[in-house]
Image (cartoon, rainbow, N blue to C red; front, side):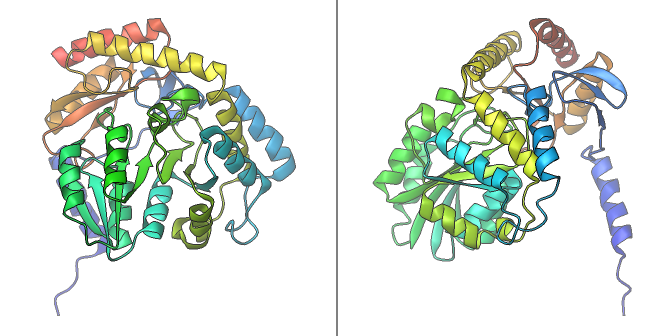
Length: 388
């Protein structure tokens, strides 16, 4: 009998391969509070790598909400929400989000990944056909695969191709289109208005992942769908990006929310979010939908315009807080990251498989917390690093 390779030996071999292809990921350590300037691996840097778009992750008001809940509610939920872990803070948070998004019901999850996998595996099954943008997030890809539905991939943002594929699937038990609204690695926008029209024309359901748009786009920060008057069957959002907290949610109808409660495995078989985290997210929702939230969104959009004006090779929508600069080569993008770090600016180099082969890039993440002076320093460093 041939002796099997041990798990450890196999892991070592794969790590060597990753290092040889310049795709090995090494942890960095954040010390202290998240913000526009952070202490990373023991040095202070301008932070252009976070998803903290409104600058709320380090906001003391969220910490105050946590402290108040901590005194009364402790730390852990203690059980799945379906048992004795459904805390009043969870219920308050879901009610606050439903009111904000003008939705019938909201169901919260422990992460955006859990939300997409839980939702898609609940509402789809064998016999259905799901149409997914080719650049959708890994959590959407995995949710589609695990659902056992037939998956049809359409070219990125190509609504004409989507229309053709929808027309070819007339015999399916059900047709479902799933897309991000603001794409996490490209910073560009789906044409949610056109996609919604196609769904109506072909009797298809629509699921939109607004993870990077919630809090940032649309009236009161309600997302790209709200900006275009689109009401998807299910809207996925997160608390861990613009809202500066942790967790995610699905905004939908009461019946679908109740089905998720009963069938979404990532919800049913997980301990509930710590109540203190839910309390912080409720406080963040109040800020995001307020006049102060509007002010922060205006500042953020101004930063995005300024950065794109200074970097002609930057991609993405004009006011998107995600600003990709494609370098191409995996090794070179990490060299650029290192050069920037030497000048006190941190931007993460993103390599495959997160992005397609040959499109390794700097993924610049802006926040409303960046000052004009910090942005100017960062722009100068970016110009020089990319030029070299």
